[in-house]
Length: 181
Image 1 (cartoon, rainbow, N blue to C red):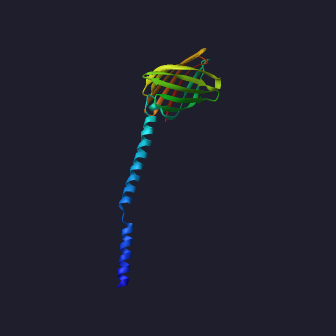
Image 2 (cartoon, rainbow, N blue to C red):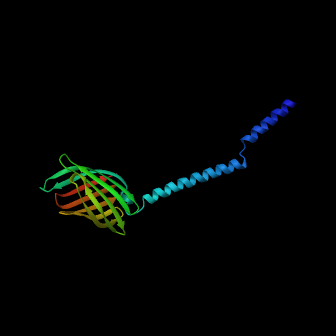
Image 3 (tube, rainbow, N blue to C red):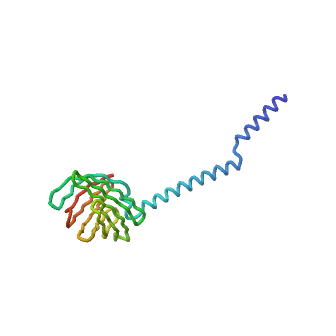
């Protein structure tokens, strides 16, 4: 009989140990609440990084097109664009190459309403200048300028497709590029 009482007491104690105490329930709830707050803060910071006039461009885009050189000849090119928007600003790069031609265009731009301003550089020719224009929602028209060089650049984004057109007054006459992500 003593053996049965000891067995029941051990079983009852074991059963009680598995039951969550009020402190354990509180700790579990606190841990779950902390996880939810942490997840919400990550989602909130990601959406802030992806909001703004350049959000539709975010990421890496690839494609091809043609470049028209100053002698009137055209060449097929392959291109990669990278856009990193943060609120009203964006860093971007566009690298295009053919067998005989290559350009590396980089820019830092800022939007104030529909006005776009910024700077640009082209690494292989060691030139840089200013950008100004207007746009929003993935569609922009800007003029890239420096001493002795002006280019009109248009960017049209529809979903996962993008068209880039450049028209210049020297060095190369222009480019037509189709990109997708």
